[in-house]
Image 1: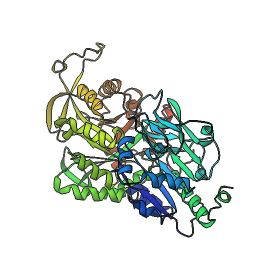
Image 2: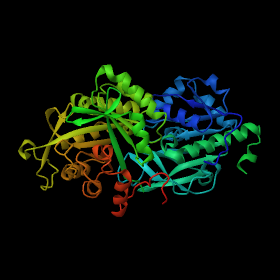
Image 3: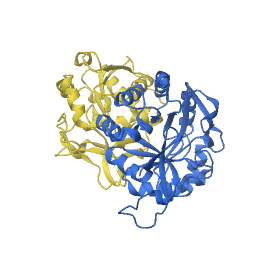
Image 4: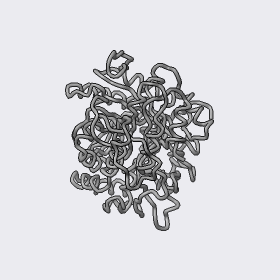
Length: 227
Length: 272
């Protein structure tokens, strides 16, 4: 694998706000050269360079746990400060304003809502599907357009507003099309599970860690990194 | 377009992969994470562990295996066998499984499916149905039946040892209405016989439910996988012995699928 192993080692907080599988994402981050810090504590975030918001399940219980653990404001502040964040599956959906799944009000960092997939032959959408890249981005460096990633979900985020199309990194078809990856600056989200998507999944995580490493090395001049 | 999944199933007992006939003459076939890693390299789209001992004393051992697997295998992992409560499901997920399959416990306590789906989401809950052919008369006529289906299947639990008076098609519909996000349908008539999947069973269930159906029980060769999808409506196909005994490789199965026009994920590292 073309190695841009980040130096110094990037500390990546993995937000633990539920009962999902955090073993895979933690180990995957280790393999790509980062130091994962699984945390449910806002105070721990301070010492880390990047944040991964994983997640499976429904939005309302997830938001309830984020509120209960005092994590809502720290996550918003993290993004407002321009620090690197990767939302995975539900972790991506929570970045938006609300979810049609259970009417939950979510983080509201990005404009738009989470809605049920339309025209799907079967739901949940479970399995490997092609991720069609819509623009080039460091997150997909070294990953072929149309490469397959593992999905397991029934809902997906629908970016809205003037900047919506600029957010979209990739789309996927399951009946209708939906947004399967997006980014704005150092904020990124993927609807699939890179930690369960074999070599390409690990490559995507490596790319995210490299983005964070670059920002860490360059201080706040993050713009240099994606050039 | 969504790819059809090919899933090797590993029967696990006492911390090892075992294979036997109808739960007897168990033969040690190796270390579960080791075999799972090999299958992932060979193109498995998902791995299923089935804890066939499913004893309370064996839970810790199983969780250890799940964690060791999650640390080295980066394809999805579904774990079944012996999960009876929401907390047990939580433990299996936390150890590193992506989804949990419920079987006997769900039949005995159908509300368990709902509780697990509420807590972890439908996508994490697989209901495994072991079905055996029975006399059609044992099954009441469905109001929505089109008159074509005269075959019937009953549910069996406890690893195929105990039949229950429950129609498999009715149970499939009910399990989905309670929140199952996928059904793993095993024909007990075909399981271990290598005489092909029970296509009528698969077709009947996949036509009744909106969630994906995994075909299981009876795979002999690549043509059976093709039939399970094309004729049975399966979204994924599971097999054990033909992979374990290296009678056929995942690559052979995927090549047959591709030739039949069924979309599959290429083998990692293979030239497209």
